[in-house]
Image (cartoon, rainbow, N blue to C red):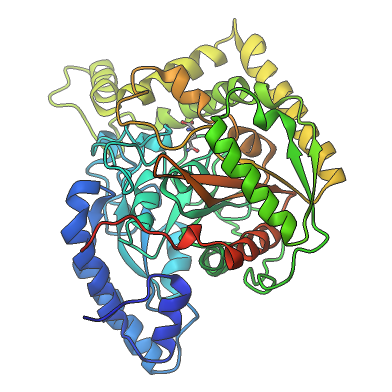
Length: 486
Ligand code: GLN
């Protein structure tokens, strides 16, 4: 039996040395998906024929000496990124029949790199959720424990990578949706600085917060993927024209002398004590690599959730208004008039959580409440940004948990939206501030993975990846895979 490499770097290396063809490695992943994904449900669409065609093209490109570093490497794509000719559902009935006429910029980058699209991954509807239970296509199982959630909204991407149904995946993060599922599934995920990765063709949830990024088993692979994803895009008006770098160039550098801040508010009563112990242990490990850790203050931590849920819902209500049954997506049957078409299309096409957010957002933006909610939330957003600015003036990065608990049970929080929202306590503030942050596996509690979060200043992605890589050189959490067979 052939043992296939299961990392991006390992696959790229085997392809470059011609030890393996892209068709062989693609076939291997498609076989695993066909054998195992029935139980996990991490893919909405499997692109078998398309993947094999891309793999053959990649093999020809490599043979002609024209291969790029990741040519022929398979990946899974969150179903929020538009893919020309392939359904892009965004986890919603509203887009169940939507075939995009164009590629997202991120998709174009992946295509130009010669990477192979295995399929489109399951996600919370329009990326609203923390458990992947709001998807029209059903929940995703956490590969470590099938009765637990994988996190959300990029739950399908995280579960697919953890279960080795793809060596890497794309995700998007509006308030934690790359980092939290990465933490709950035991993989590494990076939310880049706002504006670093193009949002063109990435279906909008809350435009001032949404950011795409890489998910993989380890930091090295995330760096290789960042090299493909990052870059200025004139088609995205919030894209930042800042030079990209080789994100893998400094991975090997020592972190001796690195100054780390540990926010004291991140270790209060909302944090599970066993998760806290794992995080403390990881911090000690980083200290043994030469990092200096001090306690810092982020006094506005508790304001992040209320401010985030007002701002993100307000932007959601505006972004969701385009789904009216006129131009694309779902349309109700036999409408009697225009009003009937709008109301029934939206009533039938959207799920419960999306409707809840539209209602919250529309209320917060209504003329009588605008100042009380939306303006106030924007003012708090500024205070949160200032808090990070103050803390990052003293230290290079901040360290803490990604999620207050390990993965919770499927169904456990689905009828309690506020308790679900509270699980985003450590992630949402970073999006409000526009900063980059990474989550990586740092232990286990009750046989479920714990994620350590590293938060940096604007455009410090290389540093975050370097710290994670150095940690992964001396620890083995990122090497563990759930025992699934196949
Ligand atoms: N859990 C958060 C929410 O439901 C974040 C989602 C995301 O980052 N897309 O809004």
